Length: 223
Image 1: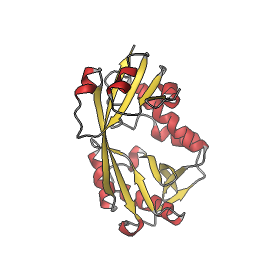
Image 2: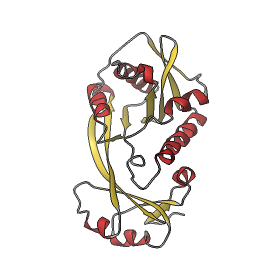
Image 3: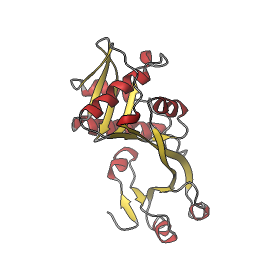
Image 4: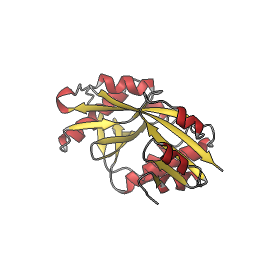
């Protein structure tokens, strides 16, 4: 169901097990739609606008999402010959790396949702990207260390096995993956990062990404 004010989000419904919707504008008319149905509602708003109406209609803050963008000429690379990329990686191996690794996302920070449901949403999303062929395995000395999932020029998901975390390798993995996107024709590469994820913000800044916009995300559940 989609209207000018509200759309259903079946990809979220599959993970959360309830009807899910996104409000498409910040107005009292749109907010009133959230009283007409049961389910989970999301709205994204400018951080500088008044949140008074959101609180009146029962919405609560979950995250601020930043959009870093990297232009080809701004790319700062960190190279390591031990790192390679492969498209030949098993689906179950990629999903295993993803399981339980996310904590900064808005669904994980939504106090009304079970964490396992938020984990399932990310696993479902990763599986969909794998099925359309936009997930790369990241190899370190020939061994699978992580994955990099994208759509077009948008980096959507990435993660590393625990034994490769905390070793300063992320900027090298990202360099190899971002360079591949540029080599395949992208003029710029973009991603989305929670403002709470300081490590990721520092990482992309070191590669030359510039932060272009931000949105506050609010949720509501009618049971």
